[in-house]
Structure formats: C-alpha cells, structure tokens
Length: 89
Image 1: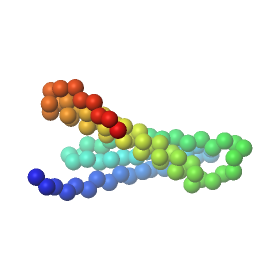
Image 2 (image 1 turned 180 degrees about the vertical axis):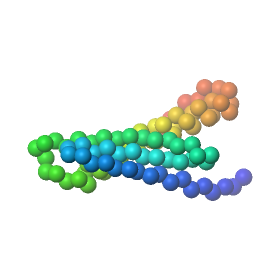
Image 3 (image 1 turned 90 degrees about the vertical axis):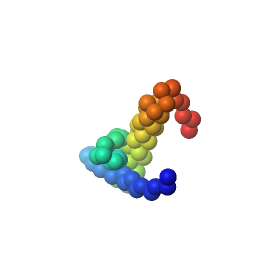
Image 4 (image 1 turned 180 degrees about the horizontal axis):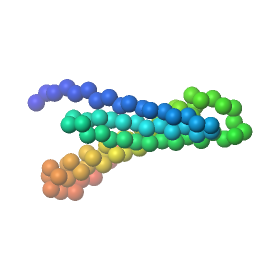
C-alpha cells in the first residue's frame, strides 16, 4: 500500500519577562493530539534577544514531542505484535 500523509506541527510561543514557553502540537488522524513543552530562561546578565529564547524553547518543545511520538510508536508496535518493542535512535 502506498499512501501519503501530511502532518503539521504547530508551535505556540509565549514570552514573559525573562522566560519563554513553547508548546508544540501534532494533530494526528482521528483528532488525537500529541504535545510537547519547552522552556527557556534568560540570564539577567545577558542581552535580551527574544529570538534566542523562542528558538530554544521551541527546540525543547519539539524534542519532548518527538520523544512522546516515539513512545506512542513503541506502544502501537507492542499492541500490534504482542511483544515488547525497543527502538534505537
């Protein structure tokens, strides 16, 4: 079977004072949503460059989301095969 799917990830970024929070959301078939969160804190002695905080928080949110997606994949394989699954990245 050949199929093509397109998955989109939405990243919401909220900056407040010296903290930047990002939430990455992946909506899958059937409306299931997987989320990852990331936080960046600016050192008070550093120059305020909002893009850096946004990039770091988004990267951390995407990293958490990718680990959660991997956990979902492992659970799906185990449910499908009835055997423990271990993926290597």
